[in-house]
Every structure is written in structure tokens, then in C-alpha cells.
Image 1 (cartoon, rainbow, N blue to C red):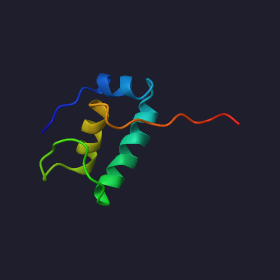
Image 2: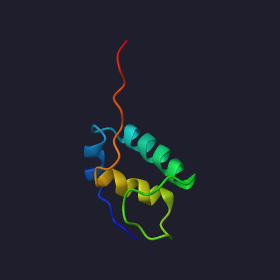
Image 3: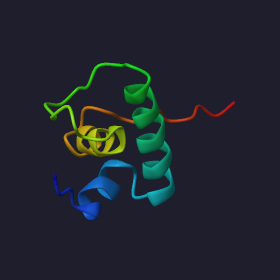
Image 4: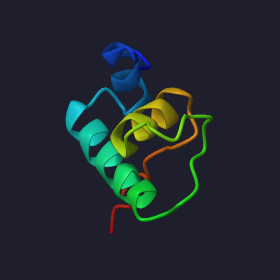
Length: 68
């Protein structure tokens, strides 16, 4: 099991736990639907774990909303 520090993850998501949860859940859903993994993870790793690992390594980012 991979240990990922929460502080490191929150720093990657603009200091917002809410944004982190949304980003991780969307990426985990993509992985569960068959999208390729962006990190080396064993096949037994759950999609949520892989998503958090991708975020911590900086391979997945959230988009900034454009103001209209």
C-alpha cells in the first residue's frame, strides 16, 4: 500500500480539500472506466489510490474556471 501525505495532496489542489476530493473522484472514475494509468501501480491497486498517487506526482491537474 502506498502512503501519500495529505498535506502534499492539498498543496497540489490550490489548498482546497474540496477541490482535491472532486479531482480524485473524477480521475478514479476515469481509471475505473478503462483510461490508462499515468503512474506505475500494481494491478491490485484501487482506482482511488492510483488517482491520489497521480495527483501527488503532479501528473493530474485541475482546470481553472474561466470568469465570464
